[in-house]
Length: 307
Ligand code: DON
Image 1 (cartoon, rainbow, N blue to C red):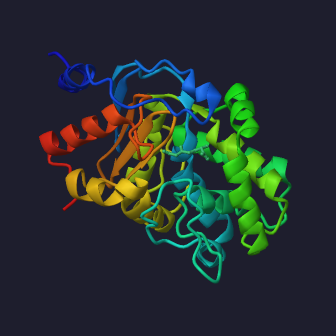
Image 2: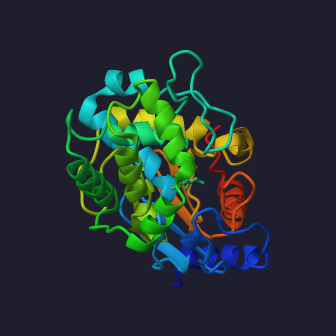
């Protein structure tokens, strides 16, 4: 019998392939040079079956898709209260790189935007964790979600750090409000390493499936974080994961999701599957154009909308 799911995925990729609208991220020079034609989709079920089509094994940097997973690590390492004291859970309705701090307190609105994610990075590991140990904990944690050892793309890291003026400005604002309690530049360096971790579409599907499987990697069987942490992460992904397109996404696709500027996109259906797509051209919100189309199709074809 021919496997049905890879055929279905290949057909879906074929349908979105002609769409050449959008542009790869331009503000990180190394990403602007990415091959815009790359295209992939993968499903990973909670019982450990993985299906893919297209460029599923081509590596690219995780970028903002790291944010929900590192939020999970911070919640696991420090507990809810210390993390919530520094980062809220409200949608910002603004772009991912807006400052978006609560007036008065200076607390970033949520962990999916850069301001929140930079703060969350600083909350991984024990208190007074050395920056290098924290980065190691982040890479180890992301690797556990994926079920294999991940590495950092040094060229993308150097390229982003050379142009990280906006994230540095945000981090200094956070430092001025004591939301960051250590050197702003060091935290941005760690956060940028986090964003420069290399993954494939297959890895991302498994990472999303680990959330779908309540924190247990479906292939390795490792419990990466608790069910309570996963519930918090998926709730925030649902309301804030697609930035200022989060409302459109919630109504039209209806799956907790997260995008990254290298062109990755993940979605998690609790108790069922993790979905990932990869296509580098982005829309004006910084979300992958063909990735959004693929998710709209998957949601409608398979009735995946959670409502
Ligand atoms: O901080 C940044 O700007 C990037 N490292 C990540 C941004 C990102 O992926 C936004 N997502 N669509």
